[in-house]
Each structure stands twice: as C-alpha cells, then as structure tokens.
Length: 379
Image 1 (cartoon, rainbow, N blue to C red):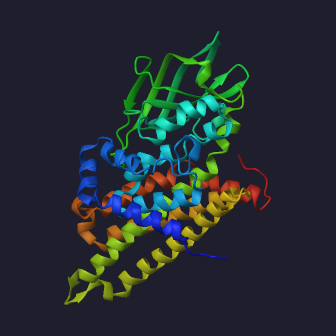
Image 2: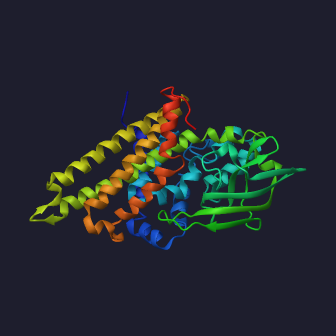
Image 3: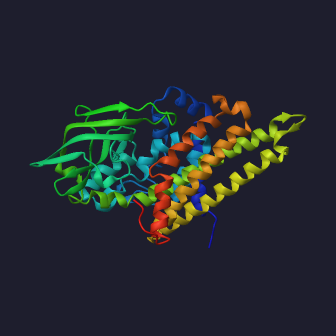
C-alpha cells in the first residue's frame, strides 16, 4: 500500500499549479461577477496539452489514467479556480470516454483530436426537466429518417451550452436510449441560460432541440445501448468530481487558517481560540479522508477493477467535507466572509454544485445500502 503520489503525478500537480498561477483569484472573482466562459484558461490548458490527459495517445492524448486526471483537476480547484475552473475543462477530460470505448476508428480520429486540441468545446445533454436522475425515462426523441436522425425535445442543466461546438446527446430511438456526438447547430437548438447562485464562469442552460438533423455517422455504438455506454463514464466522473471537491475544500480551509492566524481580536489571533481551531482541524481530517477514498477509487479504476462503491463513496464524502470546510471558512472570516473580496463566499456557493451533481447524496446512500449492504432497493 502506497499513499503517496508518484513522481509523475507530482510533476503533473506542479505543472498545473504553475499554469493556474497565471489565473489568480482576481481573475475568477471577475468571472464570478460578470459571467462569461473562461476561454483563455481553457485554451491555456489545451495549449499545454492537458485536455487529453486521459485520452489515448493515438489521437493526441497523453494516455494516462484517471488517477493522473484526478491530480490535475484537484490542482485546478485547489488553486482558487474552484468549480468554475474545473468545470471549464471537465467535459474535455473524460466526457468522450464512450467514444473511446465504443466509437469506430473513423469516429475516434474525427471526434477526439479537436476536443484534445481545444478547438471544440462539448456539452453533455442527458438530464431532462421531468426525469431528473431517472435517466431511463428520458423523452427527447431521435426519429430515424434514412441516413439521419431527427432530434426533438428539451434538456436542462446543460453546462457550457452557450459556447459549445459539439454535444454528447442521449436520446430515445425506437429501440431505446441511443448516444450521439454531433454538431451543436444553433439554427436548430435554442439555448436559455439559467440564472443560478454560483459557478457563474460556466453557464447552465435549458436546451431545446427543434428537429435537429443528426447524421447516422454521429451515432456512438449501437441503437438502444446509449444508457449502457454512459454508465462507463459515471465512476470516473464521480472520482474526478470528488478530487475537485477536495481541492476546493482545501483552498477554503487554507484561506480560513491564514485569516485565523492574522486576524487579531481582543489582542490575540482568533486562531488561538479552540472555537476556531477545532472546526478547522475537523475539516482537514474530513477532507483528507475523502481524498484517500477518491484515490483508492481512481487506483481501482485504472487497474480495471470494480470501483462503483468507492467512486460513489468518494463523491459523497468529498461533497460533505468540501461543503463543511467552505461553510466554516465563511464563519471563520466572520462578517468579512460575506464579502466577495475574500473569496470564501464564492467557494461556499460553488461547493453546492458538486454536492448536488451529478448524483445527489441521497441516491449515493441508496446505492451503498443496496449494493454494499445488501438492503432492498428503496426507489
């Protein structure tokens, strides 16, 4: 058992820290205030070759594992970029895993290099207003007409749809749920941005497909197997989000500890008081425990071993630990924690993204109860 990062993983972390230093707190504060996709950050990651970290070398990627991708994403979040920075590149890192696993050679050569190079930005269109996490019940239809499919219907909570050139789309055909990766044709797709409480640098949207033509060549794998295909990306997605949550929590904790050392009240630093010390110490322990679970899950995945319980547990533990750390960072700052210039209120708002999505804490508890403890299914 080895709980240390490898030499290569440490170099990845150091390189990402150096890149992220070019985008300081003020950059992300401006993005939070004004909105707008952080295209320069996304392009910097692409230019340095990071978007293909877990993609095959044959198509321009680095061919590394989910462990290395988790190190990278954690470093981004921990830098102060938080979920805004991580979400700007998250889809590129592992979103097209279904194409890698189930796409044809022609599709891989056509679809993967532009994503890795940063020429294409992709959104992931699965969630619908009336189905939520009950993915098998989605209603967006893809009607086969000769060599094309015609897609109509509505999706919701679709990130980066304001700027995406491509969409990974799950839709219902005659034989069941089917996966497509195709052009985000704005002549046939209406995008309505959702006004939300945080992560303003990366948009969330309602998306309406109005008879969008999708070539048969853009269908991934077989008809009716789309849900099976996206399941292959769920565990690595949970692992990456867990790593990002730990990174964001660590960032908030570091700010809180620094403030507690420097803030003098009643002629002593507030960090000398156990009422400040103890919650922060507990936050550190919770974050580090979640981190161990995240990298255990990543190690299992990279070895090709089952990791569903560990990946879900990592996402749950990291979500709770991150939220608690961000909340405590605000409380440690007192009234200043409510001020944007201290950044911690932004971290608290963003921590809720990873706590809720892509799967709620409650459904993770159901999964562990059923799959690990052998209890009857509750839903």
